[in-house]
Length: 388
Image (cartoon, rainbow, N blue to C red; front, side, top):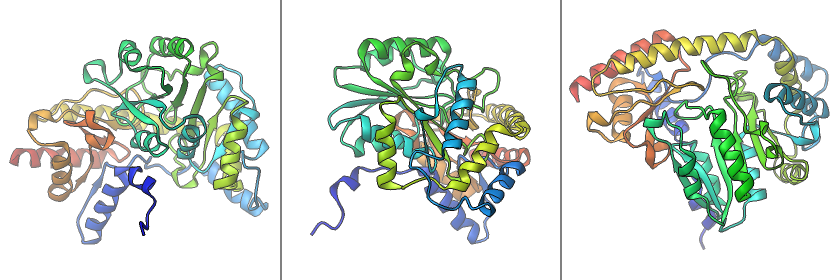
């Protein structure tokens, strides 16, 4: 008997959690590790949001709720999304899930058939390719080039669109590169989607963590609300990773199918976390602004420090909280350098290949850590590379 279903052999994983586990195991043996591997803000959830969650628990928000989310939370999300993106969506467009990943999972499951093609960024969040393959569709990688600041030319995308293309996944601000899609590029993607008739899944989880340029959403273009799924949530912006609170914005005719998937899998998202989410959206935003300002300082310091090390060059990211330095001149494979940094230098990072084949020759560091630790990590990296 084959004890494990065949489909499970095609399901990938997220390397960040594997490296985190290895780093924690070293720490348990007494090693000092600087964590630059995990994509999690090192800030606490804002106090007003925590208090709203505590108050919700005490007020009895501990029971089942509707699969698509509490009506008041769906309304708050719809209002916030509409104001931020300059579009008009209602609570009937919103499905709330335990974290943002289920939106990726459910969207491909509900909209993509086996044999369809889905285009996704490479390097890119590894769950994209994993989910596409898991449901029997064909993953079609779209390379992001360093000489374009890890964006792509619309001709590269159009060249990959075929009659079988069912969906294109975009991510801006981008993980792992920190790049952003311009309004012009988004307009071109929107025109192509209308002309070639495919879905766009827009991962906008880092939409509030931008620096010099504001975030632009593809939903602003005519017709795109009817063919776009937007993935967003509270984990990054409000430092709520452990609360597991995400959401998707869907066309009205798609929302019932996603809600039914929620009913069949999670039943619903925890009610008290949704009440806390309402406070996150409608309460003071000063903690968010402070966090983004601090990330910007760390970004500038980290990029300058990496560019000062022989054999490393680093494009300055425009959003999110990652740097994606080029380490090709060092003559080591990305995985080997990742492992040596962890084992010999005590610096946890991720090989660029954790995000796809185009990531070879790169590393990803998260600067969701203190300036003091980033400075220490830069020294440890340079010391190791002198040996290399």
